[in-house]
Length: 316
View 1: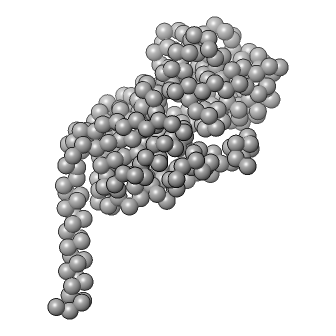
View 2: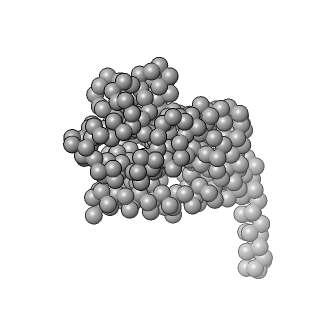
View 3: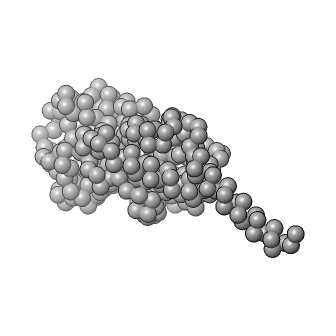
């Protein structure tokens, strides 16, 4: 048999193998790796996506928590698992910051974007009744800095706090990190910190109970769910940060498998269950986006975070 004929047979076999992979996928439980603590916005978003995705994919999905290093532990762990589509990584702006700082072995070219789940503005929150207005809140920080609670260090939360106070001419804040948004919200009420850098989903129940009050939104426009809360830009402070969350797989995941995951996750997050979740946290259907939009945003996030971290001295 000639070499050329053997080559053609090899191509046919590999083609059938790829088709079989996509047709058979998934035939076992899918793991979704997240760095977030229970109750945080990333944890909630991941689990809400999975509610419907299980049905769409026809297989169970489980969360695997790999906490530490602002997401670097999760990324390094992800590099050790097979590129077969049975492990999905929840990817956020926090991961982008760790990539920008070089704190993980993962590189941008190691991942393939699948879908975005949220585009969630950072919100500065305080105990209700402490400040009469956003202006009072800013004025209180002109001479002496407040203590800001965050869920990361040298990442989206404290970068948001530092840039807000820097661009607003306020005193430098003290940063106190916590393990997750749920714990931070609890400690804000207890008085352990003056300000919490949170997303709406992380403090909805406390806001409804009148314990926590959003005071400044770090977004280009006011949030539909918080129409009375000013943005930093309205106050003359040019700061806008958003906690973006989505999903990626290994760059060398088979194309048909990756496409099936993308189609399934988009379908799951377009369902009323997930859309209702978005509405409940002040977001809308534009949060959900496919791989092209999500991939471009990941690249931009890494570039923007590197620039902000350099300005603040976190990167030399």
